[in-house]
Image (cartoon, rainbow over all chains, first blue to last red; front, side):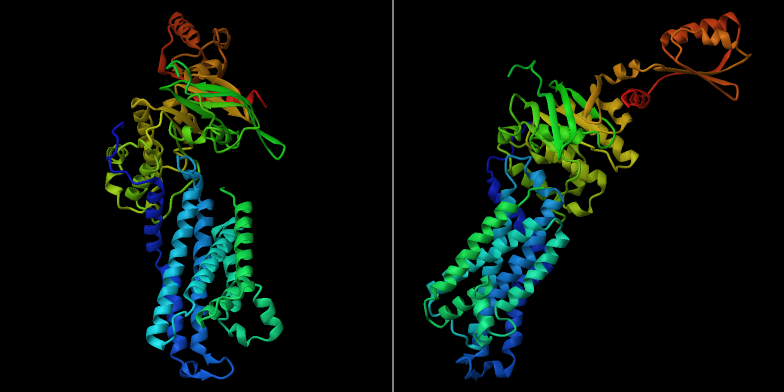
Amino acid sequence: MSTIAAVRRTSPGTAVLRAEARLFRREAGTLFWTLGFPPLLLVILGSIRSFRKFDDGLGMRVIDVYVPTLVLVALIVTGLQAMPPVITGYRERGILRRMSLTPVQPTALLTAQMGLNGTAGVLSALITLTIGRLAFDVQLPKQAAGYALAFLLTVTAALALGALISALAPTARLATGIGMVVFFPSLFSAGLWAPVQSMPHTLREIVVLLPFGAASQALEQAAAGHWPDWSHLGVLTAWAVVLTAAAARWFRWE
Amino acid sequence: MTSTSPIVEVSSLRKTYGGRTVVDEVSFSVDEGEIFGILGPNGAGKTTTVECVEGLRIPDGGRVRVAGLDPVADHAAVTQVLGAQLQESELQAKLTVREALELYAALYPNPADWRPLAERLGLTGRLNTRFGVLSGGQKQRLFIALALIGNPRVVVLDELTTGLDPRARRDTWEIVEDVRANGVTVLLVTHFMEEAQRLCDRIALIDKGRITALDTPQGLISRTAGSTIISFTPSAPLDDADVAALPALASVEEKDGRITLGGSDETVTALLSLLARHRITAHQLRVTDATLDDAFLDLTGATK
């Protein structure tokens, strides 16, 4: 009983992260939707011949516009689809409560989940950029620093929105449901159905005030070699701050 | 900390939810090395009481101390002396038994070695099984292991055997006795009389948020009228008046020629001499103690 375990100890935070990473890898469905789906969609869209031709209206090829959008799809899927049911499920099934009986607080589980989903989003985005570059000759972002900044702000906003859904949904099923409701407008504002530039003026004015609309504009500008408009970065920052505060305000441990 | 001071002290604990008092002036203390039972019907406030001990709920009144520490204010310190199995909690469905043990061991500064612990709890053959496919008994054994993994001085076990089949229940009882034999104090919440009677040194009987009795199982039983049950089939009819005159007699029942009396040891002695005087043989004479069941109904019934 009193035997002290091996001298080489893993830190509690690392142990939680390692266990959650293992569990993350065991969810084949989530892995497909986060890592496989956005690149697959790019391959499908890239196979459409007309998308690879120069579009006079856009001033570039359709596929060039879709790469930033699919980078956003990766973040939307991880933040809104993958993460909320997991965290809500942990609360619903008393896993957070059980952990609060140990010297490590359940925040460690949330941190691990956000870290893993964030990483999956980044990985998926990198795969998408690589495929775009290698298969369809889409230029890598020319304004790399601006792209990275807009991207990190979007990751934060997406995870915060996911955390807010986890906070508000009483059950994992409802978390999936609410995630779905937010999912489609998010995909739309990211420009999945029609590029934001080609939207009617009034609609575009509204869409760029939404987190993924602003993100899509910022990423596109950086991809084209410009520093993203401060208005877009400002909208993204505001969403990230407000959503984080709201998630922290309403999150319940049980 | 001296060794004589109790490991868990609860005094005048009060907890209300939305104006409804669920725990009302509950006081008890648990000595080191004891198996202390909290027994009561569903919804009596048992779980709320131990949740205050675990620091999961903030009491509305009264005082709780675990090894001299406040479970809310000193939560981090309390988690190192108190382990617990919760009534309704699960683990991640795809986490294996080994991974769960390794994970929880890593959360404590001085954990027990999980291998011998797993062996003691009969989990060695299940180390690579995922939590989601374990049987109810295996899940509970894993939760006992996780409650013990931080080398606690006291463990709280809440409705440990609810939903288990009789075989698994008996196995679990042996584990609880084994835990105490290893020097860990046990605070056991249950609504099974048989379980409390078998395991507990002392029992606090809770009904509607209040403690209605606190005693050893035997003490609780002997408080009830008719704590000894005598049944027999007399070889010849007995005079009703003679039977009614027996000392400490609490109940008389006759069915198909078989007589069942509730009373005390004194009743037994008097009955035997009565039978001898009348040269009546008592066929299939059985003298048994009343169970905690009887005591429980008697004690909670009195408060209604």
